[in-house]
Amino acid sequence: QKPAKETEKGLLTIFLIAFFSGFAALLTPCVFPMIPMTVSFFTKQSKTKSQGIRNAILYGVSIILIYVILGSLVTAIFGADALNALSTNVWFNIIFFILLVFFATSFLGAFEIVLPNSWANKVDRQADRGGFIGIFFMALALAIVSFSCTGPIVGSLLVEAASKGGIAPIVGMVGFSLALALPFMLFALFPGWMNSLPKSGGWLNTVKVSLGFLELAFAFKFLSKADLVMQTHLLEREVFLAIWIAVFGAWAFYLFGKITLPHDSPLTHISVGRFSLGLLVLSFTIYLIPGLWGAPLKIISGFPPSITYSESPYGVGNSKGGGTSSGEALPEGAKLAVHDIVAFTDYDQGVAYAKKVNKPILLDFTGFGCENCRKMEDFVWSDNNIQSILKNDVVLISLYVDEKQELAEAEKYVSKETGRKIKTKGNKWSDFQITRYKANAQPYYIILDSEGNDLNEPVGYTPDKEEYEAWLKSGISKHKKGGL
Image (cartoon, rainbow, N blue to C red; front, side, top):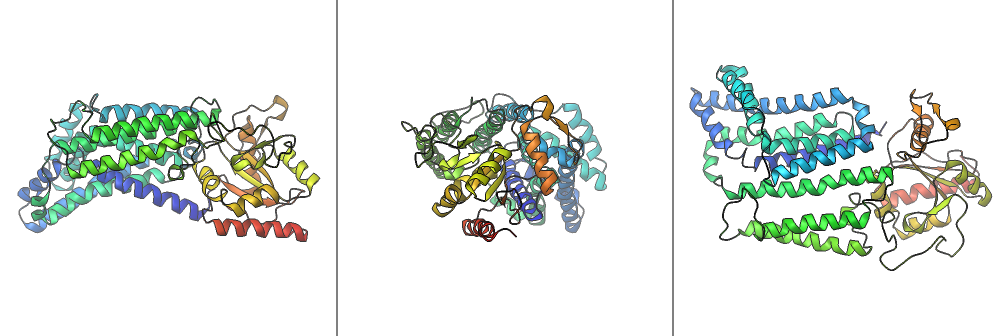
């Protein structure tokens, strides 16, 4: 299982992303115009001011309840732990790539995703009943009517949360619905605020289209993950970056009014806000371009494939061949990994080499589709002191838990820990981690002696360079002293 602190961090991130996505959904043409309509409906229907306030708060709570039920259903259908395993499943990632492209195309104006009218009519009839039941159905009517704008955002959020596993889909829906419900409650409490709301208009469609461009860009993250796990090398770093440059470049042109899409209003001028966002998107697009020639692009670390998974891992026009940075031949079974660190991808070969050179082992449980592993490699392993330790003081063994290479028939077995059939190399390394360390999160690091015995406590994602360096040194010093 994931360490408690890491799980809390992951859930907080999901909550914040969902919360800001809820505000983004609020600024779409299907939701924004409903704020004044809904609030004025409650204030007129209520006999007293306090009753109006109570009804509006109940309405907001109902919105939250509806989306939390949705999150709970996703968790119940897929199962808390099964969702975690799905995040590196090839078909899961391909299906969600197609789904996000479908959502993005809808946001860009190709078509509307609309739930059947009969649903809305039935819900409307229930909303006339009054009391909490009526208010709940009013909230359900909002969810159904606004589905063409909120559906793609909710779908994307549930996909991202589902890949994190556990109660993440429920936490995501709490964050999203809270942001969506807050304005309805606040404007009912302070109706005078509604006079300061900007009028509905073309700007709402601009928000919707902008979300479409973002969804399109994020869709390729899922396709990239499927490609990385399969190791097909169809979507290498340069191709991924070229697609992102095209998507964000087109978004910048759209914001500057050079591209118009189906539902756009005629544009005589662009606002300062739109122009500023256009400059921001254009700056980001220009920032991406040197990545095609090997720039590290640390701002988006974890999104594109790593620099080692590219047509030119050392930048255009550079190649290092099959030796170490000091010119020696690579040991048998080893490869040059990120930052030219020599790494073994087989445990037994790595341990045998560590015995031969009498060095401690850095055991690295990682994955091709693991974003935090790439962030550690890009931000922490790139530090000169840490890089020096990894190149000179330890033998690195990187075990990929999502490697799909089939094991020979004689090597396949049933796990004593989980009862699952172990068919691939990734299954084998994942089962090794679960069986030995009772953990299944990546990255996961531990220092071993050359006999394969643990020298220190394992750590997971550790973005603090000083902390990670101190942890490395503590394990290595124990090896020099002859173990724990």
